[in-house]
Length: 276
Ligand SMILES: Nc1ncnc2c1ncn2[C@@H]1O[C@H](COP(=O)(O)OP(=O)(O)OP(=O)(O)O)[C@@H](O)[C@H]1O
Image (cartoon, rainbow, N blue to C red; front, side, top):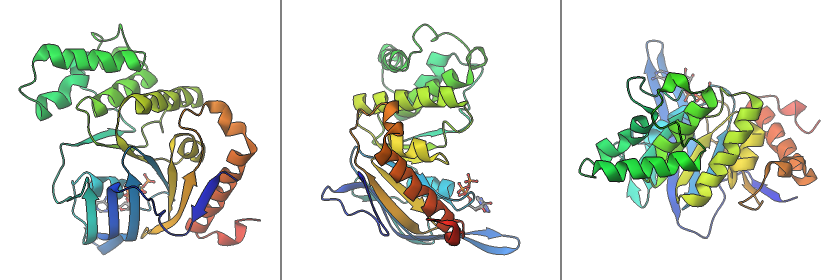
C-alpha cells in the first residue's frame, strides 16, 4: 500500500511550517465549558498539503481559527514559520464553504481586496496584474468585470480561491471550500487546486468531509477523534503531486480510503464496525 499511517503525528525530516503542539481548548457556554480540542498535534512541512477529516462537530473549524490566530488555545502552542501564533496573521489566506464575495465589487476587485489590506502601497496596476494572472490560472479570464451573482457557484469558489492566495500567503486555510458544490464541479475544483499548488508556494490545511478529496489533494491526511478532538491517525499519501482523477480508481487508493473510513468509524465511536 502506498499510504502509510500511524497513530501519532507523522515525523518529517523537514522543519514544519505549521506546528500545533498539545493544543487544548474549550468554549465557554451558558451550560458550562465545552471541551473541543484536547491534545491536538499537527505538523505540516513547508509547501505540503494537510487534509484534516473527522466527525461532524469535532472541532475542525476551531483548529483553523487557532492556526489563523483568530483565537488563542487554553493550552498548548501554535507555530507558523518558527513564530508562535498569538494574534491574527497577514501571512495566512483563508477560503470557506460560502465564498462571501462582495456583490458591489467586480470579481477582479473582490480578488484584489486582501492586497488593499496587506499591501496598501502596492500600485493598482500591479494589484490588477496579480489578480488577472490568478483568474486566468483558474479559467476565469473574461469574467473580471462581472459581479458575483453573475457567476455559477463553482466560478464563485474559483474567484474565492484566487482571493485567498492573491497576497501570496505562506499558509492557506481551506475550510470545506468545495463542500457545497455538485460532484462534477467539485472534481474540477480539485484539479484547479492541484494546479494552483504547483504554481504557488503555499502550505495548506484543508478541512473536508470528503475522504476522496483528502487523498486526491493531501500529502498527509489527519483524522481527528470525536470531540474533544485529538490527533487520532495520520496517513502519509505517497502519490505523485501531479496526480490526476484516475488515481482515485487505483487499488492502492481504494485501500487508503478503506483505512480512512475505518478511522472515521473509530472517531465516531463505532469501532466495532471498523474493519468488519
Ligand atoms: N463560538 C463558539 N461558542 C460555543 N461553542 C462553539 C463555538 N464555535 C463552535 N462551537 C461548538 O464547538 C464544537 C466544534 O465546532 P467546530 O465548528 O470547530 O466543529 P467542526 O468539526 O468544524 O464541525 P462540522 O464538521 O460540523 O463543520 C461544536 O459542538 C460547536 O457547536
